[in-house]
Image (cartoon, rainbow, N blue to C red; front, side):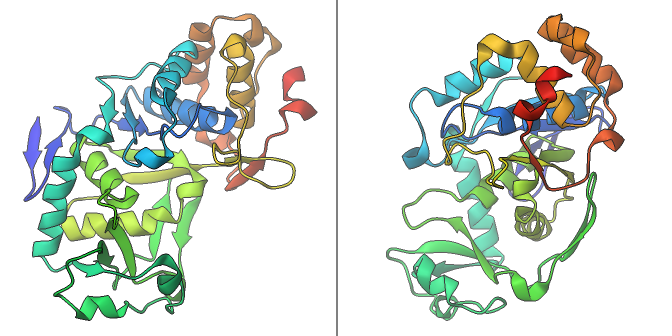
Length: 313
C-alpha cells in the first residue's frame, strides 16, 4: 500500500500492524563479528514477530567504498541463512528521492547553506548556529545544514529504556548534504526508513546518539517515527569497537555454525553444544523460537570474549 506525505512516497505493508525491520550495512569492507551480531539480532527481532526483514546497502559515500564489498556482504548473510525479504535497496539509486525531500525541508525553512569547515563548526558552542545561517546568498562550495534548534531530548529505547540527552551537548546544526554534493547519512537513513515503512529501527548502540538527529527530521517531515532499539556494540578487551575502520577481522564463512553460535551467546542466549553441529537453517529456526530481549544485557558495549570461552559453550 502506498501512502503519500508531502515529499515522500511511503511503501507501507498492507497490514499496518506488521513489523518491518531492516539491516543497513555500508560497503566499506566485509562483515565482521560485530556486524553479524547486529544483523542476527535485527533478523531475530523481526522474524520472532512474523515480520519482514529488509536489506539496504548504504552506498552513498563512494570514497569509503571497497570494491566488491556489497556482493561480499550479501554472500556472507546468505551463508549464515539470514535471508532478506524483497529486493535489496541501494542508496546510490535513490538520489532523486533524497533531493526531493531536501527541497521540501528547504522550502519549509529548516535548512541553510554553510561554508564552514569541520574545525570551524567544532569551535561553536553547542546550541549556537554558525554565521552562515544569516547569509542566505551563499551558493558556492556549501553544505546544506539542518537547523537543529529544538532537539527531541528523550526517547524510549526498546532495549535500553528511557534515553535522555543534555541540550547543551547537542549541536544546533547537522549536515543533510555535503559540500562535495553527496547526501549525508542522517537524511538518507530517515528518508529510506520512511519510504520502506520501517516500524522499528533495531541497530547497534554506536548509533544511539544519531537517533536525536533523526527524530528531528521525522518531526520536520511530519511523519511518525518508528520505534528504536539499540543492541550492545562488540568491543575488544582494550575497549575499541570492532569496525571496518579498525580493520576488524572479516567473518569466516567456512565457520558459519560457530559464527552463529558465538553471536547468539554474545546476545545472551544459552546455546547448547549440539547447535554447533546443526545446519545454519536449524540454528536460525531454534533462535527465532527462543528469541527474548530480556536475555540481552542492556549495556551499550560488550567485550568480544569469544576466545575467552564462548567457543566452549
